Image (tube, rainbow, N blue to C red):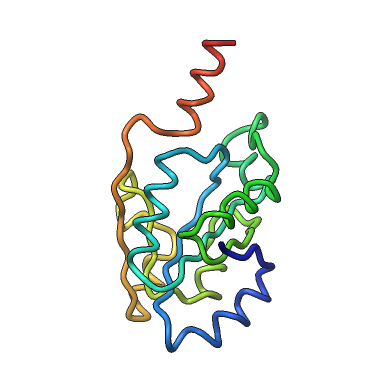
Amino acid sequence: MGCFLGEQDLITKLDTEREQKKIVFTNGCFDLLHIGHVRYLQEARSLGDLLVVGLNSDSSVKRLKGESRPIQCEEDRGEVLAALSCVDYVVIFSEETPQRLIEAIKPHILVKGGDWLVEKIVGADFVMKNGGKVKTLQFVEGRSTSSILEKVIRLG
């Protein structure tokens, strides 16, 4: 089970582990956790020793997804993610992108879903410039928070 930490506590902890462990970083809203998320996070974790998930804050999700989102508050989303055995650390960020967080964490591997082109992944240039890798992982077709919400509305 992972830890839900503040940014400074996480950075301090990672600074002591960076030399011995390969750090993998990903980010997202993770509003309604579904099988696509779980498979993605498990695959991300398999690439290294520690998986750090940057979680969009409530205000950030609202800006990205609209006024009706998030469905769950950031504390609940973070606690659910931290409860997954494949997730080591969860940290909330409020900016539009996780660029600053990525630069602070300095991951060895940066991952996003297969629906992203590597050249469009925020932080990719920084990670590669520092000797790290950027990977896109398999996207589980038809599995998304938006598709779950559409189904709920149809059933409602």
